[in-house]
Image 1 (cartoon, rainbow, N blue to C red):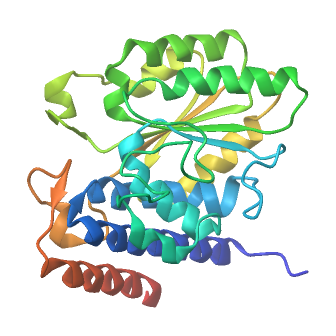
Image 2: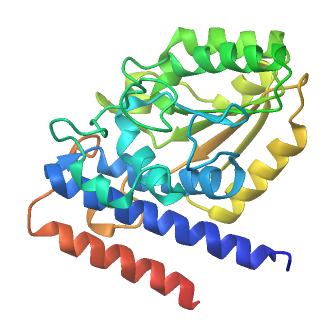
Length: 288
């Protein structure tokens, strides 16, 4: 079997990120609105995890030996569904039922409905607390599975997040990796005007975590960060956090600078333009 080169790996994950963005636009058009911007911004993070890091079985989402991916930000479900479709856990055709009655893909993530959705996301700040308990439980069971928790920079406003961070360090949960989407935007406005949380790198380091901060829309930087985190992983050791600076709407210029981007309303005639811009940008990068 031929070993994959670094360039091939980068191309593979970049292609997965493009398809995740395309899937997100497909779902967004069903409703005409939604958290499309977050899905586009986080697509590279999701692609790096699902197409390169996570151990899972698409045909058996509850496989006991799987790594656990916890989506703390339930409203990012549109991006997670796109990643699950890319991973083969959810049929691509099912994405067109997004947010519809009786769909397995509700607008906010629900573990009771969706294969591969480990927790229900609603009120923010709960994901890392669950991840800590899950990582500790897996270690007690002697499992080699790892726990990945996706959370947002807005969740750093929540005291429960920092309590969980302390707990992870106390219990030396080397099998836990947190990913923070730092897109500088939340429902009430720009993150630094709602509650200033910087310097977040120094804070995570002070809480005892192995901390890296990267461009969350740079696939190469993400892969290097995940490789570093994987090298740190152990049953007993330091938990890892990857702080990812991203841009809402990334890959679709029409949406990247749109006001009121937390919950986007996109006109009917704009969806095809969004797809064309996404494809043009991706093919332009591939040609370089």
